[in-house]
Image 1 (cartoon, helix red, strand yellow):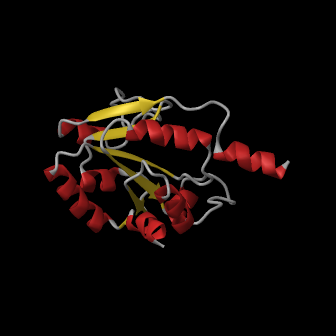
Image 2 (cartoon, helix red, strand yellow):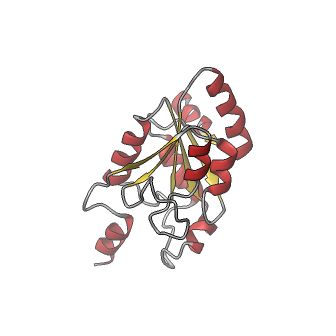
Length: 171
């Protein structure tokens, strides 16, 4: 049961996350933040998250709530897995230190609250993009850069996507 407790201890509210990050920063931990739906965990996700973890000493993953996923327009059948199930599976990955849910359409508010040192997105985004209306703009990059942090883009693993898995199952 100790391992199950270890996994569950990684699940945090925003308030708990802020408190834990304050302690981590006192210990000079480098806080890395990324976000997404992570609906059906696959090789592409795990590779991306592992590379993200390598950019610091603590990795926080913020996942969209079920309502937030619905508003993103990913399809009527999404999310496949509930927010609790997605958070639990991500928490089981050893290189993830904390999982927190966010219900907004973008992660702006949670990035502002958590103040990470490194913000990470996939390479379909551009860390140098400053036009907030561009699809390549990384939400929250302005906050992280203003605080002296960095914004990184990690290449995606070709051939892996949740949509692709869903389509394969349907056919």
